[in-house]
Image (tube, rainbow, N blue to C red; front, side, top):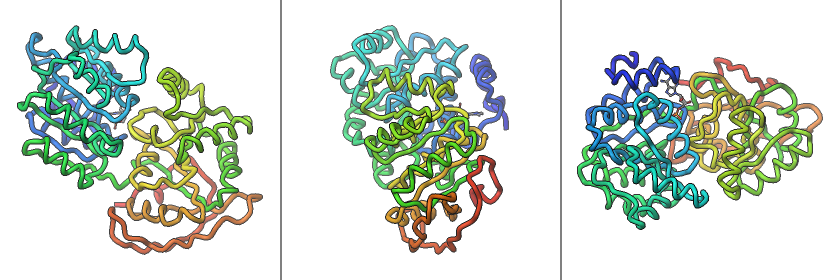
Length: 418
Ligand code: AMP
């Protein structure tokens, strides 16, 4: 299948060519025809699958075919974070470059000028608004929005929005939207609360699931059993042992991220911490440096595990095992995007083994535990017993260690099974 099979307007195919997209990804193959038909849709897909273009392309095509006078605020996209809002806006700019369609990201935390710019773009008739729920409600209360012509509502990363406590805000926003509209909900998981939300706001939806429980092909996954006291030295060994290009180190808290960043800089490694205490401008600057590869190491929390799309990250290190197994998939999804390869390494201390076992159950395979490099001493032994969790059935694994060093080359044995 190629993009030509969708019969998109030529202005849109020009944008696709300019972006270098030639073949639709599986989520695009399935979602685009349904969105074009006007169906409500629940799509279960992780980031890295091409989900953004899966909803943007059909929406842009439909807007092109809407008379200009009826296009004003045609589509509202709700996202959990400002970073994701900016990223979607950039994809609209790329894909929609030749269409003349304009979009505006609406998020909090900016300065007064951003606020004025957001209001002005809306008044001037932007066709698409991409908003975080909190700021959108503020604008609604100011009477700055007119949803009369709204045709499409997209909820992106709906599970994340609910995790962040936006359930009531979403319902409040929806009360201001026309009842006659198309609603599309994207979520990485189909937790019961997502189903409940979908039931409330979608009308006879179609459902698509692109398996969440496997990191993208091309990610080499490894783990080390290490006591907390060994983790910093291990991180240094990994970062300096070979050339990685760009790397993201995930910490469980922003305090930990700040501490790791200080330690890495002390060791002479160039890194910056990315967390919610930073000003919006600082965050954008750090991401810009990281994207341009002038900053090789980014240290952060799960704020960067979802949605942020940066090409060519070759290494992801989980300094701690994430508590939610789904977060593991999101973190690991930062590497090996759009069919490239990458390595994801997780450090497991003596108390994190059960959490790691839950991850292995979710992804349906055991991840190789490599021995610690010489000089770091013995790490803890792997004693976790298989646990049952909401994601999968009990499944015993034969845990073994190997002598392999971290490698950024994919091996067949590291590819997701099944
Ligand atoms: P997403 O899952 O939307 O975050 O997209 C992941 C990455 O894949 C982004 O860098 C997109 O620009 C890229 N992408 C999306 N669709 C395609 C496609 N059909 N061909 C190549 N790259 C794509």
